[in-house]
Amino acid sequence: MLTPLDRLEIVPMASGDTSLMLTERVDWDLFPGYVRAILQILEGAVVDRADGPDQRVWTVRIDSQVFWLAYEDYPVGVSLDPQNETASALIPAIRQKLLEHRAAAATDGGDS
Image (cartoon, rainbow, N blue to C red):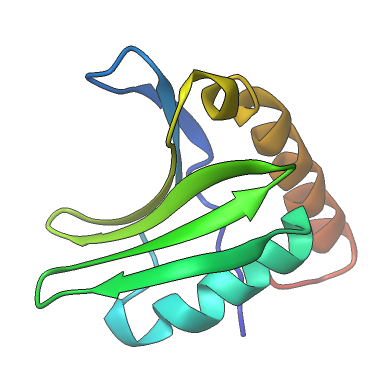
């Protein structure tokens, strides 16, 4: 599947932590495959899944820290949200890794 990484924007959260907006180009049906692709890039794993009628929020582990990978249907977007301050501190490094992946995929004619 394509792995859109069009946003990669760090945004403040109400908690004072930071979130990483990944894309606005993934719909409801593509979300599970997108999560698998992102976790492959980041060497992460799904811990739990919560799917509701208007939102999907999957708990994932990346670098021993726990995050939510969240799909919002309005406005449409997928974000990586830290569950604590320690996870939030990893957001810039995660963003950098995804930027590097996006650049490499563009050079290779890849999918990002």
